[in-house]
Image (cartoon, rainbow, N blue to C red; front, top):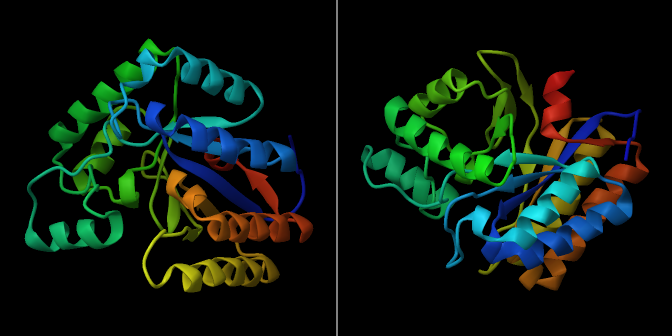
Length: 247
């Protein structure tokens, strides 16, 4: 599953948890069909009405198999839930960009360490190790960034870039994603394919984020796969966050 030439792009599957096991498998099948390695962003705590990750033996086995095929597993929060507190402007940003689920957006370093360790402990119970972190909504407070470095993470991602730790370079890579539902859904789908074409034409590294809810709207799935196929046809090199930051 290697594409040695071309500029890099990353495909990530968000919100991987027992409650989203079926859409995760559907997205991964699409990527495996295309030989595209991806980064699976795992929520280890209870999420979406499902149990914590270690309680789902089938999903744990599935994730180990995916890692064995060249996909990366990364941490995506602890419970992917909103956390009260923080100044009003942060609460507003959380609501707009993460629909209130910006779990790590207003935490102090000590608060972030507590949640990160809780997530890592659950992953360890499933015999899963990770080096990277993508916060829900791509929102991380300064305290969270300090906590990530102190816990030995190799990178974290924001909406516009991939940040090496501790204090390493930032790779500017915009992330394209959908927001299912609402009047702007079709426009957003067209924007994704259009942006992918523009970024590919200019050989600008970029990312495509897949979410479980995207699969409830057939048009969004097709727009996403069209964008991925166009990037591959143009010679872009799909890679994982871990491989990207290791180079």
